[in-house]
Image (cartoon, rainbow, N blue to C red; front, top):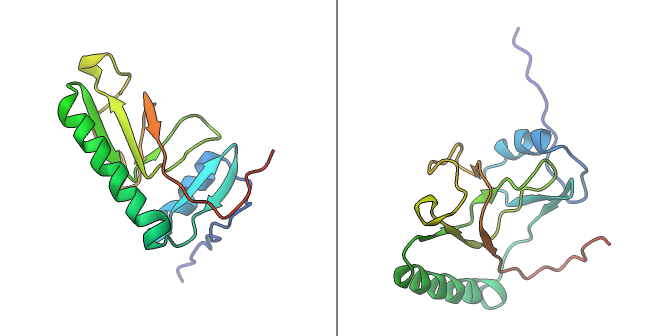
Length: 134
C-alpha cells in the first residue's frame, strides 16, 4: 500500500519557513503567494481596471527602459529569494546583468517559480485589499 503525504494549502497569515513555503507552493501551481517576514500572503484575484491595465502600462514602461538601457533585464511575475524569511513575487522587476555590475549568480530558473539569487531592483505593482502587519 502506498501512503500519500498530506500537504496543507497555503493560507494568508500562515507563519512558515522559506523551505516549507516553497514545498507547499510547489503543490499549488495555480496560486500566487508570497512569503514576507515569514508570513504567507495569498494574492486575491486581480481585476482588469485596478490591476491588469496598470500592470500592462508598467510592463510597457519597463520594456522601453530595458530596450534603451544596456545591461538591464526585465522579469514578469517571478518569485525572488531575498533571504530566509522573504520570497516576494513582484508583478514586474528590473535587474542589472552581471556584465553590467549586477549580482545575479545564475541566469537560469531553478524551478518554474523561483529564481535563486538576489536582485538589484524590484518594481512592484500591487493593489492590495489587505493591511500589512506593523
